[in-house]
Image (cartoon, rainbow, N blue to C red; front, side, top):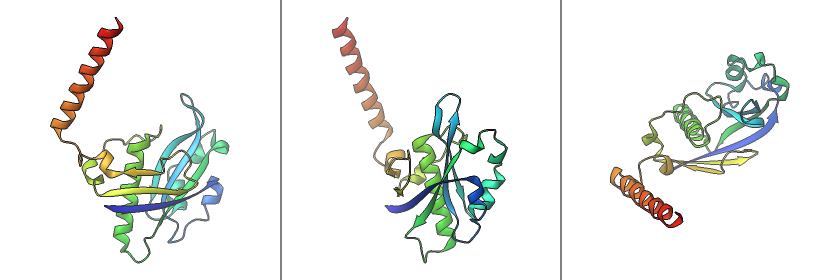
Length: 171
């Protein structure tokens, strides 16, 4: 299993992101703010930046929101990746983003269907100010590594039978 370690920092403002355009200013980011259904100060979005935080976040036009003053941004930089090829780093950023979206389902992330079988060999560890993210997300949890269709069917049948017994006892 490959471990992906992410060191989170923040909160930052969108204005402060404009200065983060160097070669080490890439990774993941979380945006927190108000959502009409979920309330204030909730995880709205998880994104990735393969080039720089400044370029990626400004392309998404968060600055057009009426609520931008209340948004908080947290940046996640990959740790322990010095010396690995750039394409491997970008692959880890991509997989970590998709695993975190799958595990947390932020309100503004519309892409939620992924080929989760590729998560099987990865384990994401969140460090620092990771806010409402889980400290760890295991690819084995989101892949078919420990489950077969038969196992799921048997588990579902066992749960249904247990529920039916509970209903019968309580009626």
